[in-house]
Image (cartoon, rainbow, N blue to C red):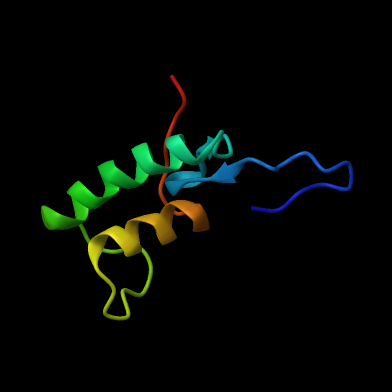
Length: 73
C-alpha cells in the first residue's frame, strides 16, 4: 500500500477498477483473507503466482497486494 506525502494511505483498486478502502486493521485483513481462502479452496483461480504456497498464504498475499476487492460495511 502506498502513502501520499502527508502519510495518509491511498485506497486500493480492486477488480474492474472499483476503489476499495485500505485495510483498517489486522482483523479486517484476516476476515477478507479467510473469505478468499474459501474461494481458492472451492476452485477459484489465484490472482498472483501461487509458487507452491498454500491457499492461506496466497490469500493473504493477494489481499495485501490489493488484487482482491473488498468493501467495508
